[in-house]
Length: 257
Image 1 (cartoon, rainbow, N blue to C red):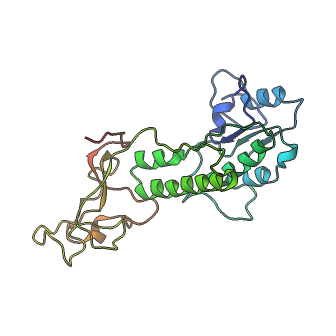
Image 2 (tube, one colour):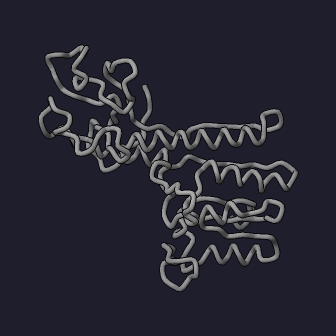
């Protein structure tokens, strides 16, 4: 951050840049060494056209032609899931989306004219899986896809190399005999009473499940024949935790054999 001096830094976890104790104008942090990295960055960039921003409005107002360096920290902790992010257009303090951050970063980097390297991550996909919340993870995949789309549209592919990859895997799986057109977040088994291939077992289960995680044993506690009696919220609700084979506080990474 200080040695390579990137032109654009956007993200969350502001508290990791601030001291735990003290009177930083940027808020309270978690650092035990007493160092205010935001102030250090501002001091380092004092002779340039620099900006430190904390919300979408300030980021959106940046003029690329007048921006040498920008440091944006939009949440004191991790950024929000896309489904939980405040998208109200008149909310001046809202978080930018991954797409919006990517677009602004490209606009700023293009002014330098000598080519650039830009890395952006759909980091909340990982968080959603660890929490056993498949819907949140899936919608952050869509947010990541939108960021890729805006990058390709702005830069083209003739002189730009795009590398899109995952760096590890998780343990969700798809099972059952759900009817054609059934929601991926819905039931794959006996809850769809018409056409089930296991009519005598009468055990509802979801199409998506994790090998392990917070959902292990969480909702098979009532009448197996009545999904409404065993699910505190519906399986398509944003915060629903998928079933898991082994109960753990956090779902783990996995490999496919």
